[in-house]
Figure 1 (cartoon, rainbow, N blue to C red):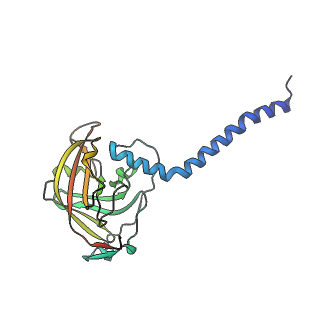
Figure 2 (cartoon, rainbow, N blue to C red):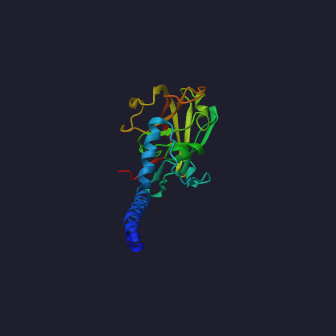
Figure 3 (cartoon, one colour):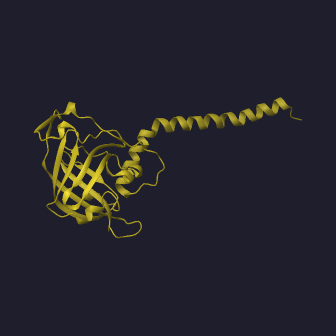
Length: 223
C-alpha cells in the first residue's frame, strides 16, 4: 500500500516538470516577442490579412508641428528619431482622392485597424530605397480606388515632407513577388491593398500603386 508521503513524492515527480515547462514557455515567449512581431509583419505582406491575437502597443512619435516639416534641402541622419514597431511616425496623404491616414511602422492586424502600415523590411522616406505601405481597402486605403497616374502622394514625417508622383498601377496575385522589388537602389513608393474594392470576402488579388520621389529633403550621413 502506498503511503501518503509516497503519494506526495509521486505527484511531485509529475507536477514539477509540467510547472517548469510552462515557466520555460512563458520566458521563451517574452524573449521572442519582438521576433514574432517581425514575422507577423512579413506574413501580412503576403496575405494582406493577419488573424493573430498578439497585441501591439500603438504609439506615436509624429509631430505635425515639427519645425523640420518646413521646406529644407537636407537633414542630418543624427536628427532623425527611428520609429519602433507599432509607432506612428508619419501621415500619408493624397489631396485629390481624399487619402489622409496615419502611417505606422509595421503592418500587422492591430496596426492596420488604426491606419496604414509599413513593411519593416522596407526603408523610411528619404533613405533612397523602396518604401512599401499597405492598408485595408475599406478603411485607410479605400481612397486608392480613385488613384490615377500623375497623382501626388505625400508622406509627412518629423524630419520633412516627401512627395511621390504615381507612375504606374497594376493588379497582381498576392503571391506574385515580382510586384515589388525592395532590393533596388531607388526611392520608390509602393502602396498596395486588397482588390477589387467592391468585393465582399477574402480576395487573393492586390492593387499596387508605384510612385517616384519628386521632392523632399536629402538625408546626410547615410554612407
